[in-house]
Picture 1 (cartoon, rainbow, N blue to C red):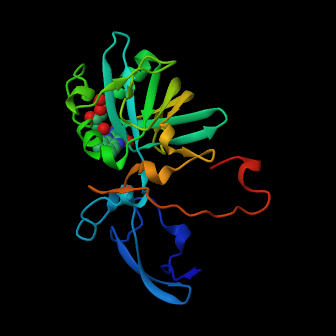
Picture 2 (picture 1 turned 60 degrees about the vertical axis):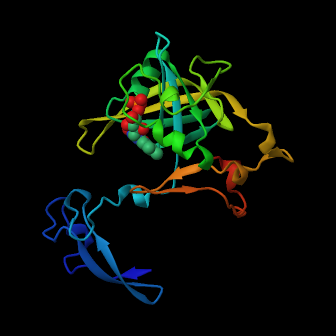
Picture 3 (picture 1 turned 180 degrees about the vertical axis):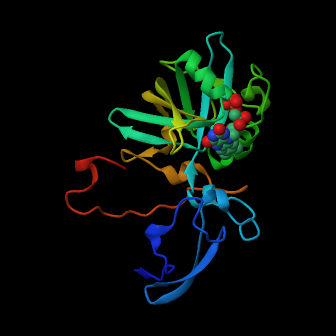
Length: 246
Ligand SMILES: Cc1cc2nc3c(=O)[nH]c(=O)nc-3n(C[C@H](O)[C@H](O)[C@H](O)COP(=O)(O)O)c2cc1C
């Protein structure tokens, strides 16, 4: 792939001082095709071209961490987080990021535990309802009409109707910084999975039939998608599980 870059060269563009319009179409040659490429520094986005921030629409689909927590006083909280993922398989570590100090963060910090529940297509409305900004202490389980089910090794309950859940012990809360080293009100909450629950009806031949569970995933704007189709791809020799990673 080759591209025609501005005469000044890529290396000369200075963050925030490139002198270019906030967004710029370039003609690029890609596999012999000419196409227009839009590039811009995120904070200088030209809103007459991209009225809505495309960031979350590009990092998509994102799995949803439907996180239940309990504080020391026994109050229960449930909320969806799409800045969520798995970060390690051995030990199994998962985490979500709170933009601002939200209840899930403070409950997880207080109780030292959290539970990930699988949000499915069938549970999309309940998942959405559970994102309501309720006063601290008002249970989103009640608000979304969801029943709780007890966990085995941690105090926060599971979403009873969800077909899968992971009980986690808090391992780290990392306050994120920007590129200048300034602390941001963004908190990555990581936990080690200590118990896994899977509805037996989805397990056959030693494997989970994930497309039958129909996990919900977040895209940009108001959009979601659902995992209802998969395809297999073999890794190159020496890759894959022999070297870890997803
Ligand atoms: C699908 C979905 C994904 C979300 N992802 C995040 C996220 O990654 N980080 C975040 O801070 N808020 C996210 N939110 C918003 C929170 O769910 C919302 O602020 C909620 O009220 C937080 O609840 P809590 O204060 O009880 O933790 C998301 C909302 C929805 C509907």
